[in-house]
Image (cartoon, rainbow, N blue to C red; front, side, top):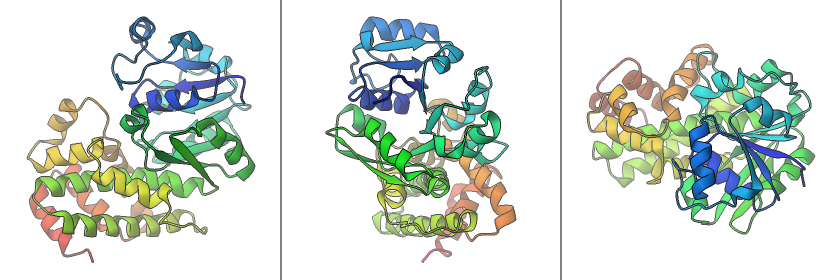
Length: 329
């Protein structure tokens, strides 16, 4: 379909996406920052750090620890780097990116700058918006590794491009849909991680399933209000790219943001929870980004406000959640 497709990133989500794409591509390029990880990957046929059940035909993979080499040799770049490291990693690129297709699988924003990934790629590298896409939807890497039925939404302002790119990710166990609501999907992907932290926190504080349902139903209402404020276009907020992603991130045992929230609810400090987790909880960074943006927008998002008080103003979780319960419906 595409002569040269590359994965940028080495985490669980990057590994899952590589597994999917290799169902449809004879060969792929794969940028992994650390050469020792590449060496072990080639020896074992598995990512040494993530998704050990997923086996790869490494003869079909062109690994490189040089991002410029991978970029130069690829037409389509699938970006799957945790949001706190996107800017630092991509800053090393010295190649012309204006003719590349970049599909972001990042579920976060650029910290400090508080901009979504497609806007950053457009501003920093001059990539036209119709060459930028996003991957959204309720899809945990661990279930991809086990080939459990999953659904992905591929977003692009150009629907024909979205349809073409969706074929990269369509397999027997991955169904794809398309959307032109790139902005809404990106902000929803940021917000759902914040709500998963809240869900984990409430679970640790012994709030039951009844309250979890109320929490997540209010969460999707917050996404609707916020997405409308930043991009007032028609969207079905009940679609799997929005509501489905909120539900799986809030409830799943595989959700790192939910695990992060559970640890905070059990009394861990933010720093202690971050140190114990082996993966990045992007909702932590997303909370500050959304809070800062909302100082201008003034959208009613009480769950995000509560998480900001706990994560950044170092308020105790128990009283803040107790106060939050009076604001939900």
